[in-house]
Amino acid sequence: MLPVLFAAFLRIAAADPAADLSRAADPTLPEAARMEAFNRLVSAGTNDLRALRAAAADASGDSRRRWVAIRALGKVGGTGPRDTLLQLLNDPQPAVRAAAAQALGDLGDRTVHTALVPALQDPAVIVRAAAAEALGKVGDANAVPALAAAFTARDGWYRGSSLWVRRHYVVALGQIGDRSAIPTLRSALDDADTAVQAAAVGAFEALAGFDYRQGRSLAEQKDAWRRWAGAQGG
Image (cartoon, rainbow, N blue to C red; front, top):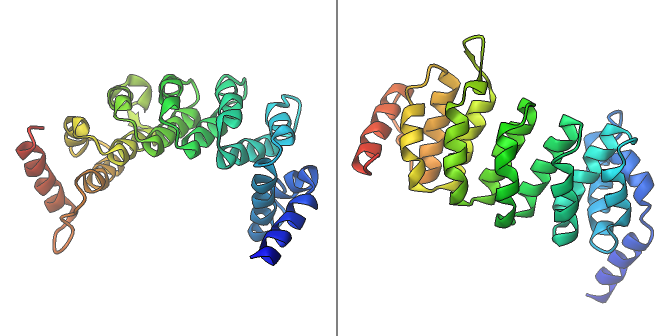
């Protein structure tokens, strides 16, 4: 055990957050190399958050580096990262707001749902999608009404076409797993967007804990879930 702990100590002591941040944000490097650098950032951040928080909040910094620093904060966890990430939900850059929302989801802290719900109305679609994804991870049933409202909102459509973000709302409702979402998921089965219909089937499976896939077409599965939803009062 001692050799393992000593090796871990040496890795942290030898870590260079600035260099690792650059490596993790370098799109020319192989994914394995970027992930190795990212994991070192997370390990170093558990002992000293200063470098990550500074890079995440640096409005003049490279957007890729900021994104990496923000996501690393979400993996570190704790109140320090949470406070920084909550502030970054108001950043002028949509990509930064989206990264902050995703990182808040990684924290697994249900108290952040009140900050994520307003992000469902963000002008940027990528932020709305990230907020939905995060709310699904957080799993607080209090977010169900906001996700249901976002699913039916007019800003989920553009020139008569359903935007991809609407699928994220449906998936999040399934991940939360609260039966108050059944009426919304039931309506999603008949949505004009076939991708939303498929997402609704997956959401029902996540919520109910079983599926109707074996020997059934998608249309038959949807019929089965309609019957199930009706039996639940939805």
